[in-house]
Length: 231
Ligand code: IYR
Image (cartoon, rainbow, N blue to C red):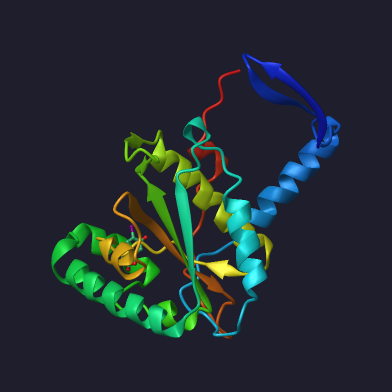
């Protein structure tokens, strides 16, 4: 994609960019349709098999997520990957304690009603069953060598995009996941010993779906409902 032709622009190194491929309109339509149909087959899964997934796969998934664009290219994320059963149990216990509080006291009746079709509750066995948990942390700020604090830019957007890339990479690898957001998530930073400037963003169990899984028969909004064209 890049050659080694380096020039200086405003004193900063730049390399020439070559677009990977240029398709005809017809080919592009076909490819974009195929990509949509492939993404459309992704489903959030809440019941996992304990079948192992090689660490090398998880490393590649994180590499893929970390190619996301980010504010001022700060790449303000850390992905923690956990396969240690003891740590997974600790995470499950802490997550279920928060979820119990949420379901019993913190979530509105309307919110719980909205979740009814998805069949979620305070029990999160997938946190122990899935072979891997990946926790995305956002780096709200960073500390330089001089101990100086620097805020990052568009942190939620950047980490949100990276998490989208991660979900797509998981799907591409033939694995499944779930965007799990126990709230509040501070216990994750504590258990995983993350520095104060990292805040847990989303937890992804990663693995294979359990043998027999049913998912809610929900439908995606059609194009007409999610778009407006200005031609
Ligand atoms: N975090 C809780 C509740 C929950 C909230 C939303 I919004 C969902 O789409 C699904 C669940 C839980 O994980 O059960």
